[in-house]
Image (cartoon, rainbow, N blue to C red; front, side):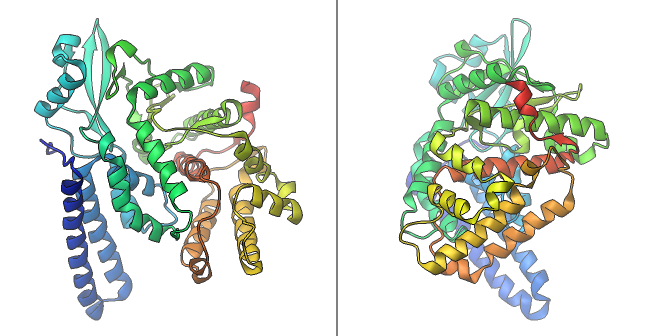
Length: 437
């Protein structure tokens, strides 16, 4: 794969890259208008989506950083984005052009004051894995194989300006109006800034791995503080294949069930026992070892769950609470889904909408065991998402609904459900985490 010798870091240079990308998208639309005159509209629209997804991704992967991270986040929204975007943006998880070796060494010397070969016995300046915020290199020290993650230059400094550039797109896509929208974007900005703090990530990684080490069939790398800094992390190199690669060929149902249970227990234990969660559940953050163990990586994005959000959120996961309309509406106000200034029409619309969504989405919590390979269940989720994304009634209303904490908690559950479906995990014990306390 071609390497990158420099990354645009100034606001002007990054903006100009997006302007160039926008011009390509404009040309694609001109082609589309001509295409649909002579071809079926559905075929023409699919070609438009494919061309736009390619050009947008190609532009973002040159920028890296938070712009590419947003694309990665959007790739998990399978029920909202056209498939062409999901497929292309998902590459941001673990397949983007890496920094060139000279730029890697320059970055390393900036934060350690030394050439990597002075710190490690061996260091490969060619990346083995490149994602949105950083890339990974292999090193050795005292006979141990290590993974060294180096953050791209300028990522931390460009977060605010990057989000300002993509804000109009996100607001349109998710029907976010101007009023009160800042709290959602500030939440994303805050978490992205945290992700660039590698000292914090090492601390979070050690905290979670120590707290969850006892979960069966789950492994973590060891992290080395003395070989890490604010922009570089050193950890054990873990052998395994990405979860998405594993699921593409696995036919062993028993192994899939074991991995699915480990993944589910890992998330439920964090959420209910630690009141914080690994809020970046995409395939690039999980490996499958040769022994069939789940390896969890990358704890840069951790979301703490405040009690005032946790309590009503999970109270609405109980079947009996969904059946009580007065109780249900009360919890919608606590979660900021309903507002005091809402009209009668808005109260009725959003009460019905969230009742339908939660009645479907919380089904796994209403059973002792759940079959996450059930294509009918996931098909209903996709159909519901698509229906509301096209709802003219919803677009007329203020779509800014819910506490800011929904952003990462919902993202966590959507990502977790998708991973469980990819694994085709069956007979998953929903409350198994209670035995792990």
